[in-house]
Length: 494
Ligand SMILES: NC(=O)c1ccc[n+]([C@@H]2O[C@H](COP(=O)([O-])OP(=O)(O)OC[C@H]3O[C@@H](n4cnc5c(N)ncnc54)[C@H](OP(=O)(O)O)[C@@H]3O)[C@@H](O)[C@H]2O)c1
Image (cartoon, rainbow, N blue to C red):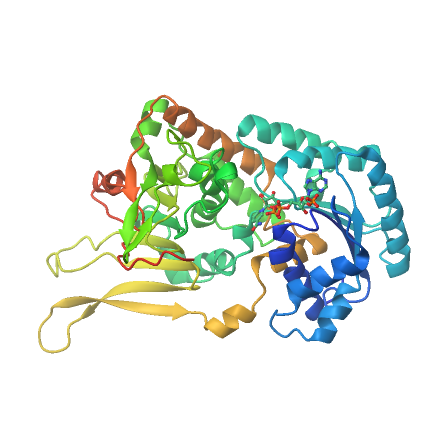
């Protein structure tokens, strides 16, 4: 059994989609593993007037089909949940919340430990933090930690304003900014792969790496989220956060240790050295595009501008490809190509590290580049292509792939990203959360590209079900490179 953690968790947005689909199952996972046992209580808040019993039914239903769940464990887990109807803009509600939290603190013997989880629309984040301070909800004993969902701001200025408002209540060491990509198994595996294998570690630098490619492909379109997406786009939705975090793990130096401080120090150095672009360079090194209608398997798939809630003249990008550089001694000059988009050929997040070919011509042009691919989702594992030899007497080479994939059943049973992250927050481990300095730098980088795009109305398109516009292929071709992953089998559902 894991060491039990005691806390009152106050969840803002307790009736929301994220809470039901991710947070209750994640907490249930911690309960099954003994990490949460007797000494915890969750206060769910939202405006709708639910009773505790009704709320517990919602929680039970959200977890009852989790691996290993029984009706008894699901129900026992749900008894720890309490509901308070609460409008986060109303100061009076924080008084009742404070009283309920104090009562549960005593009842469950949690010693003042509090986790405040903001699972609501981001425009409420500042309001909640301000009220937690003005109505004195933070305890004098135990820990007070804030878990805050993405998006963290809309651009650098709004992110800065949000950060100022939450840091008026919480110190940086109390703030856990979620980027759920940091909770994923294979993101966490990157450090082991890079730093625990001398073979890999020795080749992980500009002498040996030709280029790195990061792809976050979604098969689905904008679905019902046009209202949000029209104000966001792929750059803000995926690049500023997930792509940048993966990039940092791939290019950072070896940390002195695995402590949060040591890991954040080397990650921070990557963002300090992110090669910045002038507006002209930004336009040359970044491609944006929107998906256009297509007929796939006799099914007509709408283009982005025809989706409900999207303007016919929308300039919101559903696809981004770009070339970034990290100007550190180890990586200067190595292109890091990124691409992400909706309605691509199929869903997959994968990273390909393309190594330089051998310098001699012993085998003529037969020797191919070694490629290490890290599969982040949906399958988890990695592969390495090496040059083998064709069977028989010739010296002809052929590429061979060494593959490792986590067993699907074992992977399903492993804790989900949210479970790891909530556990980390309860343990006070900030490694897998983003620091303000990282966000500040990535927002400023992304803002430059978006500002450059705002000088033009050019918007290339790509047919739904393809891997982006031709400009994304040309971006690499210009350097004599090509995308390693070029899927052709279309799979439109995630
Ligand atoms: N859903 C996901 O898969 C997902 C994934 C990644 C990140 N996120 C992030 O997680 C956050 C929550 O997303 P979500 O999808 O769960 O949103 P959602 O389904 O719209 O839930 C919003 C919650 O806020 C409550 N609420 C709204 N106005 C309120 C008010 N004035 N006072 C008190 N409660 C209020 C709602 O309940 P009432 O209407 O009853 O008040 C509801 O519980 C967002 O920051 C989102 O970007 C979500």
